[in-house]
Image 1 (cartoon, helix red, strand yellow):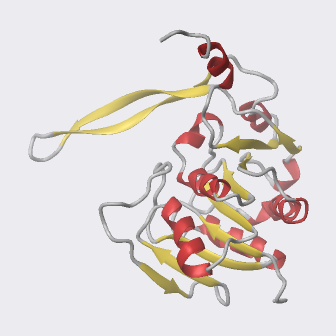
Image 2 (spheres, one colour):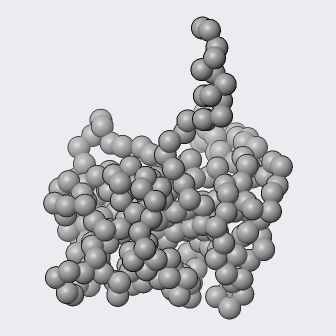
Length: 256
C-alpha cells in the first residue's frame, strides 16, 4: 500500500465476526489503507450508546489477513472513538460502517448502531457512510453489491462530503442486476407500532420480547422507503443536529 493511501476506518454493530463487515473490508481495501475496529459481539439497536460504567477491552485480531483489525467490548460509537484517539493516532480520511444485516431506513436510523458509528464520524468532522442491506439471512450475498458500494466510497474519498453530514445508504434485497440505480432521498416518516410479546419463564415469572409492525406515515415519492420499494439504493444525507429550525424561529417570539 502506498504511503499516501487514504486511511479508511471500518466498523459495524453486528460484530467483527459478521459477514457484512468481512465483505465491506474486501470492498474498501483496494481503495485505501483499511483499519478495522469493531465490537466483539453483536451490538444492534445500541443507537449512540457509549460505555461509561465498565472498562472497554480491546484485542488485536487476525481474521482479515493483512488488514490491521481490533475487536472491542465497546459499542459501535466506542469503536470510532477508540480508533481515532488510541489506535490510529490521527483522524482517518473516511469512516465506513456496516454492511448491516437488515435495513436502517427511515427512523430506524435513530436506533441503529451501524448508523450511530457513522454519525460519530460525522461529529468528528469526517466523511462517514453507513451501509445496510435489507436482508437478514445469515448467508446474504453482500459481495454482489461491490460495484455500488465501491462507487459510493470512491466518491466520498475523491469528492469529499459536506462537513458534519454522513450518508445513510440502504440496499434493497434484490439481485445485483435488478438494482435500478442509486437515488438521494429524504428520510421517510415512519415508525414502529410497538407491542410486547409477554411470556412466562420456567419459574412462573413474566418476560417480554419487543415486537410490532413498521409503517410509513404520509408516504412521499422522494423518501428512502419509496426508493427501496422501487428497486433503488437509497442515500439519505443525515445530520446529528436535531434542532427543528422552523419551530425555533416561531418560538423566538414567545414570551416565556
